[in-house]
Each structure stands twice: as structure tokens, then as C-alpha cells.
Length: 383
Image (cartoon, rainbow, N blue to C red; front, side, top):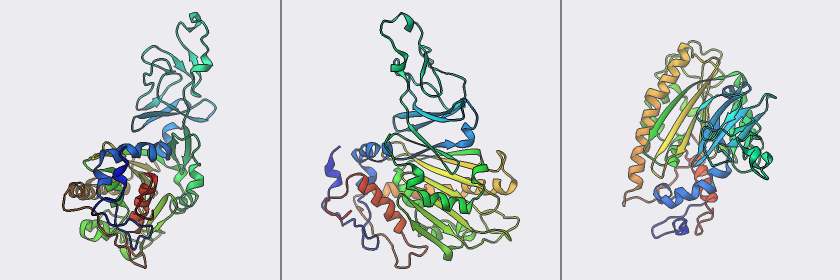
């Protein structure tokens, strides 16, 4: 890539490790194609990537697929109850093997019918018995790291990656404290969104509630803002309000709030995953921001519930998310992407107060610092 885009340019203010003193990343981090290309190797090809839910690969032969930029991967469970992940490409001539999700007893390439076992070993290759020196052991599928974390399936293209449970042990504890039944939830629904903005704009937006009061009237009626706090960890941040909402708040109705132990909880997991827990009946959802070019993002929100069919209360919460909160955030992010291209803007200043109140943007700085450092840092700053 053209590394000059990472260097301080005329007009840049310092991005520093102290969020209370730092300016934001320069606008080119959201608009420059060379930075987008650099992110593939520097960020996404060596980080843990959400692929699906354990309930989608609960039985032998069940599989799901995931795409990390140009890298297609599938996860499958074998007859011995082990999970495997492989690059989704036949070792003969490169045809993709599986699509979507489903169940199969044998992985068969649609092109020339080479077949593979769930562990990636080549089972059969038509006419190979007549090819001199052909050894099936030379053509096994290339494996990918796979890990289950709080019921979610993650993959990592880096064979030497530190296990996610080690990198985010505190996050696992936080999720389990808020949602003790996390292992019993099942996949219920996926809601897709296609947003014309850079993926980092959407992550930035999630990581602060400075915008909540002016932009999310129903959300601030649901969530007790005075108790809303953001805490940053190594590769994650938590965003929790312990104040109990009113049962008749404007977002969605809660039948009984007497047993509630929290008001709202959400987490960010590097690089592009957010995890949500709404008050009420047990639930967990993820919202994944998938880069689709410099100025486009595909979002998937997957819901995990006690049953595949949501209760009336959970259905109302899901509808609020889909029909109200997400459209509000999408509109904000699209406008920001437009503004980042303006000749009248390059950087802003993080609003970070000493008490790290609900208005503080220190979690946005935490994410941007991870981005800057992954890309080699700003040579003229201290990150």
C-alpha cells in the first residue's frame, strides 16, 4: 500500500494514547482505498471473526460458511462431535465446496466431485487411481482455527493466533454474568442491513452514547443514562446500564421488571463485532459490521433466544431494534460518511471527561487506537 496515507499530513492534529487529549483519526482512514486494502492483512486476516452460532452446527454433518473479504471458510461438525474449519476451496482446481449452511454426510465438490471428510482429509478423487504418484494425503483441505465463545463460533485465519478465551476472558465472564443461560440459547433470526459507509463509522457510532439523547429518544427512555458506563479492555469494551427500566418505556414493553438485574448491556469485540443483551426474557444478539469496500458495510444482526420462535415480548424488542434503533443509527452513519469526504473536515476531538460518564467517548478512542496500531501507527503521534 501507499504508506504515506498513514503519515501525518498537512493539517493533521495529533492522535495520542491519552483519549482526553487526542484528536480523532484523520478522515482518510475512512475514505482511502489503500487503507481499506491494508486492513485486510493487518486486521481481518489475523483476528477472531464471528462465523455463526453453535446451535447452527450442533449435529454431525451440520455446516455453516463465512466470508472474510476474499477468504471463504466453512465450519462443520464431524461424527465424533468435533468442530472443524477449513478454507472453502477444493484442492483440485479451486472450486468452492459449500455455500450457506446445511447438513451433509460428505463434502463433495460440485465441479469434479472430489470428496472430503469433515476433518478435511480427501476421501476420493475420480480417476486418481490411474494417476502416477498421486497421494490423497497431499490434497487435504487447508484448516483454519475455530473456537466456541459464549455459544458463538469464531474462526481465525492466523494459525498462531492467541485463543479468544485468553484474549477476552473478562468479556466471557461479563456476558455470562448478564446472561447466565447463554449456552442454552438457539439461533432464531438474522436481520441484514446494507449501509453506504465505512465499517469503522458504524463501530465508532456503537461505542458512544454521546449521541443517544439527541438521536435515540426511545432508547434513552429504555436505558437509564445516569448509570450507563463504558469500560475498555484489551480487545473489547463493555457498555452497561444497571438502572432498571420502566415496564412501559417507549422502546418495548416489559411484562415484569421486579426480577431484572440489569437495564441494558452491550459489548464490542475487536475488530467488528458488537454483542447485545436487552432486559427481560433471556436474549443475546450480535451485530457484525462486515466491510464491503471502502464506503460500504454489510451488517448482520443475529438473535439468540430460548426458542427459535420469539415470545411476544422478545418479538417487540427485536422489532424495535430493526424498525427504530437501527434506521436511526444507519441514517447517522451515512451522513458521517458523506461528511468525511468534505474538504471542510479532517479530524475532530474526542469528548472525554474525567469521570468517564455516559457522555464520554473514550471507548471510541480505544477502538481507533487499535486500528491505528494495527496499521503501523501514526509515525508523528505517540500511538
